[in-house]
Amino acid sequence: MNKSNRITLWLGVTLVASLLLLMLVSLAYVPYGVNEMDIAGRLQAPGPEHLLGTDQFGRDILSRVMEGTQTAFAVGAVSVAIGLAGGFLIGSLAGYLGQWADELLMRLVDALMAFPGILLSLIFVSIFKPSLFQTMIAIGLLSVPSFARVIRSGFLQLKEAEFVKAARGMGAGHASVIVRHIVPNMLSSVIVTASLSFSTAILVEAALSYLGLGVQPPDPSWGRMLNESQSYIGKAPWFTLAPGILITVTVLGFNLLGDGIRDLRDRRA
Image 1 (cartoon, helix red, strand yellow):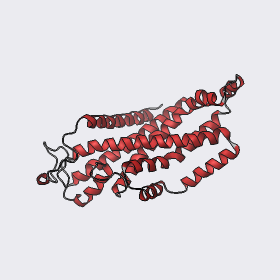
Image 2: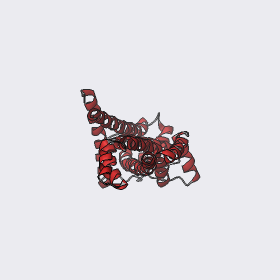
Image 3: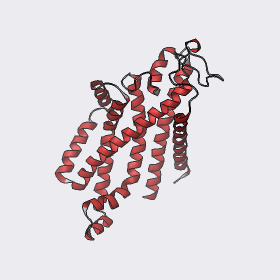
Image 4: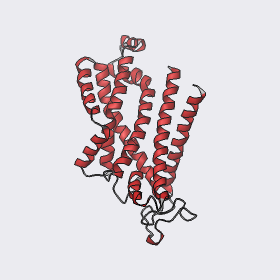
């Protein structure tokens, strides 16, 4: 692994760890109540009392962006879990069984990928009542095709490997071959996909919340905060900068982490 790749990996680790620390701190402490209003102190500039200023209702922006990290990580984690579960089911069946099962399942995946992901999410949350739960499900379904393709590829490569054939020759059943020999050897690819899907989930959630179809007020969400701040961008730019920077840093961090892990895996391959 060259110096550039090491920098990419460690920068990703640093950014993600910092955001995770901020999220953990927000579970125990925020400077003010996230919905605590102070109309007399609305749109205050950053200062000793409010480090990132206040919004149009006088709510502390630092407290809201801190709690917004909980929303971001919850959406990312649940969405990736849904995508991984669905993708593993489809990808493993397609890759291990092959033939007609592979053809049928992958045509289904191709059909899902033919539609823009954000459009599918918009349709889903528009049909059902917009909420954090619905947003998680919509984004999770969006990530299923990515996991399915990666897992199918891993099964196709590994099921004919010599060590897998040896395990079968020694009497190992299908479940044992999959759990003990195939899955452990494709974990790095899945981790990279999970990291990139995590950043995509956060970005899509921010977009849906910005459009009013994700997290509903008064709950804090970075995308919702961007929507609320656009009317005050000239008068109170700090209102826009705080959630915007956090969205950028979070997406960048997980993308760098995924790229770094992929480079590390390629070096070891």
